[in-house]
Length: 261
Image 1 (cartoon, one colour):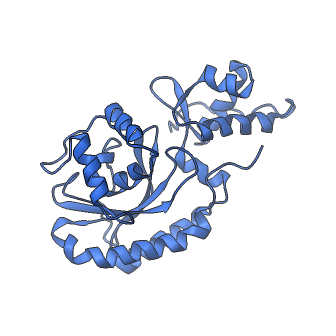
Image 2: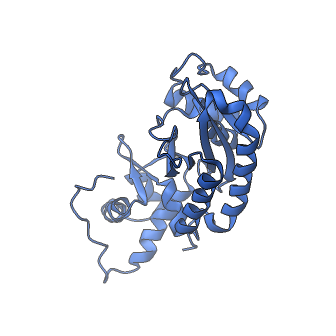
């Protein structure tokens, strides 16, 4: 979010059902499979576009909504958590414990606007992380991306996403053909997703599903990384610790849907 953007005041306190309008817009964004134009949000909420814009500005500045380059809006996946029952301090505590146990980095990942978003990133004790700065369109070349792709409802949805994002080649091992990607997804363990040398020649990443989500694109993956040369030796231990962390995350991640309006 652009911190330099001028401050947007909260919707006027005296306006009728101000909170209900904000929550109605939030609910529309939450339930949509794609980013929405202002007019579409207004039509679904039964609100004038001018009113919708004011509430969207309010949500955007506070990190709950994201505006795409095409002038459309979507819900920030990270923002689903505080409006549910997520405990961010609890999430960070679990991830810090993972780092302490393994000496590896760890993060949460989700899809936002069809692109990969890394949140709650904790580097290794040495301050290192192969997860930092991952390209948003590297869904097909990362363990977390593959985990999230597998949660989409159909092959057609995955194909559409790959067409929109493209399948950029990052290394010689990057899969750039959709049918090969589908075969790769089918071949991987349904509880553990990995990508060895596909995004970074010297690195490998692993991921497990931390939360299945409730609508399109809001699943959460827990992911870590390791040097490719250490992958085979570290895989079993990291897998066990990923599953342990997921079990500990369940009480603190909370539901991803907003409260009922």
